[in-house]
Image 1 (tube, protein in one colour):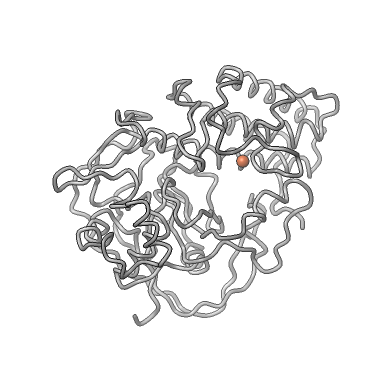
Image 2 (cartoon, protein in one colour):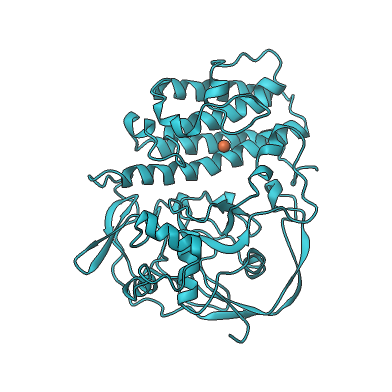
Length: 426
Ligand SMILES: [Fe+2]
């Protein structure tokens, strides 16, 4: 299957490459070498590994494959920074990435500069055909995915530290308790046949297509994500003590892990506080709840007499909504307070990834691309749920209505939140 989209020409691609590579380095700037080296859990990677692995992509899939005479920066990096590409060869064990005190952060920075220099020279030499440009284009979007992971992994690392470190003091300034916007309204959508999936000439991952028809029954989607105020009502009503609204696997997770609230939350007296990338802050009632698992999203929805949307419903509701949001470039690194209701759903993009009820699987007609990059998305289509919309840690030009993020149902370290749906007439 041909990859989607038409890659930019060499000059535009070089400009995008420079911007994305610089953004990764800038995200690591507030971090010490120690911050960059530690792995806080098997699902997270050290910042240093993110900086190296994104470079490995360009070295392996562009320079080594397509630039005659290129000499790798260090042959050992082929294994150390291979994430999961079996067709490239062996991989260093993912849960042990935090043991890699060598290479040093300084050496990783040298690695980045080496690859950047050679890659830009190769690109400017004019040797990149459309296929090569597509691989490079994909690499820039891959690096943006890792930029978000770098932030969420650092947040998880800091969440393990009783000092409650701030990634950036200015991030997520405390929000004064507002008057809120009241409960969400449910916006009605007609049932019928729709098309979903990526279309156009811009970038998309392979899993966003092929575009295809779906049938949906009439439904309603909430005008805004579930807020902390609403979620606290669920906690206060015994949401984490009553198995009633929980899926069986969700209730098992609550009991085995002792979840009392969203990740990063802690109670002081009758108030909730949470660690943000700007440090410890009191939970702001009007902001979307975040750092909840699919299990918690599902339990909340049942408790609230609603349900989660399917990914088709979400995309149908989002298709005419401009991609404007609270993305990482804003510097806030925290969800915005709920915004005023309109006739369209608000805060679909930016703020929090929204769990859907849809299992992550192939669209009709999907075939993974040939070669190593066929491993990019297709082999993960098992046991995960789709999230839509992008978060406050996502780069703005990395999100679109057809974008399919996916995580396991117990994952809580991403900026993941909840938007309710209802069947028509319920
Ligand atoms: Fe990766």
